[in-house]
Image (cartoon, rainbow, N blue to C red; front, side, top):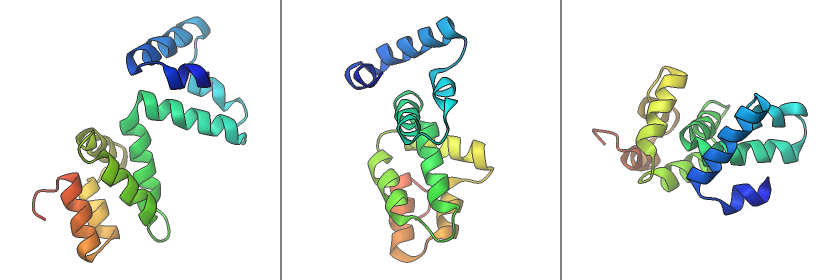
Length: 128
């Protein structure tokens, strides 16, 4: 699974995972939840999710960074900085769909000052 996930194109990986779903009746991520405490399987599920539906993966990382006691600034900055020009529009849409609040509002409510302005500028907030 690791060799396939790391050496195939996104299209081929999606086709392979769709075939797995058809052949076994479950998505591979569901089957990898056989032992939810297994760190290896947890990391493999995250990698597959990141490769196949990155907007859902990064929405979850952002949600966990913002919705905890204190902000996980490292995770928040990493996702915003690395995805800003890649797929931030889809991540923002997924964030709003999942959380019923815009990512802009969540960031503004959890950060302040120049850090907040930088994050909002990177995600493409209207009036920064």
